[in-house]
Each structure stands twice: as C-alpha cells, then as structure tokens.
Image (cartoon, rainbow, N blue to C red; front, side, top):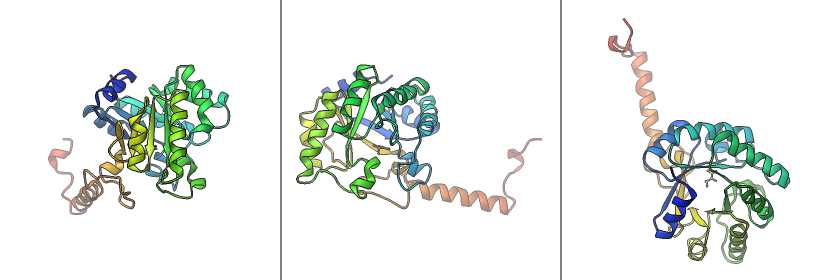
Amino acid sequence: MITLRTLFKKKESGEKITMISTYDYLSAKFCDQVGIDCILVGDSLGMVFQGGSSTLGVSLEEMIYHTKAVRKGAKESFVITDMPFMSYQVSKEKAIENCGRVIKETGANAVKLEGGEEIADIIYKLVSLGVPVVGHVGFTPQKINTIGGYRVVGKEEEAERVKRDFKILEEAGAFMVVLEAVPSALAKEITDSAKAITIGIGAGPYCDGQVLVFHDLVGLVEDIKPKFVRRYLNGAELFKKALSEFKEDVEKGRFPTEVESYG
Ligand code: KIV
C-alpha cells in the first residue's frame, strides 16, 4: 500500500512518482495493477466524463460517488480526491465538513485543493486535523473565468506569484503540489528547493512526478490534444473499430453464434 512515507522516500531517492487522473473502478484497477503510485479522482471528470465545458459544475456528491468507485479498484495506489469548485473556499468550517466527508465516506487518502495564498489558512487547519492536502498552482482550472481561458501561467512577472504561492502552500502543510501548465524552468527552480513533492502536468520533466488524465493517455479524447499529452494508445480508433464490427456482425446475422448462446 502506497503511503505518504513511500512517496517521500521516492522523492528523496530521486525515483519519479506516477499519477493518473481517472474516475471509475476499472481504469483505477488497471492503474493499480501496473503499480501507478497515485490515482487522482480529478474534477476534470466534469469535462472528460460528463462532457461539460469546464470543471466548475462538478458537485461534492459526484466527487464522492466517483472516488468510491476508484477506491474499490485501487488496492495499493494512493487515492487523492479533487475538491470541487466552492466546496472549500466558502469558510474553514465548510472546508472541514466537506473534506471530512470525502475522507470518511470514500476511503481517499488525501484531498486536492486549487489555489495559493487565499486558501493557506484552510489548508493549515485541514492538515492540523489530520487531512493530508495536495495543492495545485500554475494554471488552476477552477479559475478559468478569471485566468481567461487555458494558458501557460508563470511566465515573466507571474513566475514570482507561482513561486510565492508554492512556498505558502508548503508552509501551510501541503505535502504535495501539482504544477499545471508552468514553464519547465520555473518547475525546476521550484522542485530544486521544495520540501513538498511536486507533480507536473504541462510543467516539463523536472518535477518529482508526472500526472496525465487516463482518457488522454489512452487516446480516448479526440477533439483536444494539448502539447503536454502523450497518447500511448489510439483508444478512440480501436473502440470505434470494435463497435463498427459489432454493428456489422449483428446486422449480417454473424453475432451471436451457437457458442455464444445458451442451449
Ligand atoms: O482534474 C484533474 O484531472 C487534475 C489534473 C489534470 C491534475 O486536476
């Protein structure tokens, strides 16, 4: 079973940490079986699973539902649940209540919160109460409307802000921080002096670990392919080929055969 200690041992020894963002039992089981260290139940499910245009509409109940399914498939992997938009920002009390629900009801090992200085007090309180917290800086999808669309965050004068937010999260007690869509040199500078574990997505090769969304990695997402995604499989093509073959077999009377039928 992967624990915080396992993850810190990997960081200390320079062994890279692997993380996949996914939302269901079977994909979580595949990740677990091949030894992926961490499974993030990302609120990207609002786009990838639900077909929405952002992550903003995802509810706490949906995150709990998906984390329960993932936890069943993840016997060894460390499970992290994304706290959805406005489930932790309203007040410390609300954050404690909602993060507490996730940990108690799903069996997740940690929660992930997006933001920097503005959520430091909340993170400090959660960690002091025994809730392991993962931070998320750089491009933070829950701020899509104020950031003004998907873009690299942390170029030129913005770099100081990202570095400052990272340090604040670390001091507040976040044991791990996701760096999303930041220049690779900035991710290196942060990682080189970081006590917390850094996980990159679109942040270059120097972080302590890397995360990709399962559906991107297996090539199921056809319409968008950000620069940082590597497709290891042509999933969409393979799925459609199988479905077309099924359709043709049924239409031509080739499915089911005797052996596929009960006597
Ligand atoms: O929601 C998500 O899947 C994420 C990862 C992309 C880091 O936050």
